[in-house]
Length: 170
Picture 1 (cartoon, rainbow, N blue to C red):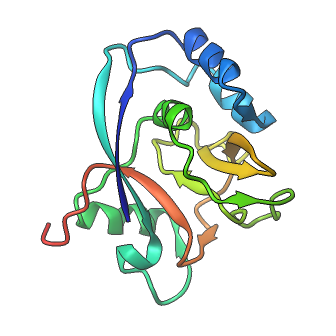
Picture 2 (cartoon, rainbow, N blue to C red):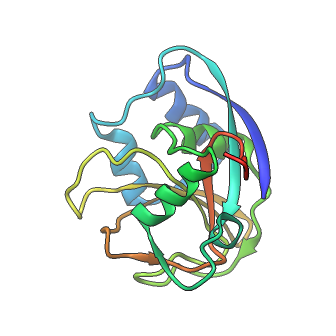
């Protein structure tokens, strides 16, 4: 489990995309689609937020696979919440602790080394990106959009980013 503090907001969507390009962050087509969507908005006022990177095991989901709604529900029990959709691109600008992985992702499974930023779902259409994950592939840093439905399950060792600070006594 890791605690992260970052700044988000206070710039336009176009400025955010420009910063990602300046930092040589690679973006897959699903990520570009989400960033360019009218549904994707950048937080207007600049603000500092606390994030927690956590695995399903650390959340207490140790007995097999868990669906997205179960993951979110368990996170909320320990004081964590979903992020606004713009958290992932702002985080990608400052987060470079990714483990290097090789090759392309596996279909219907979270790729090795990925950290999924759990955010508000902007469109229930199964073909519309549900959010972003961060990944380092062959030493390149990626902001990757992903699609999944509520039937998709995550493995216990997968890592997630939530907003807030973990509180086991919550």
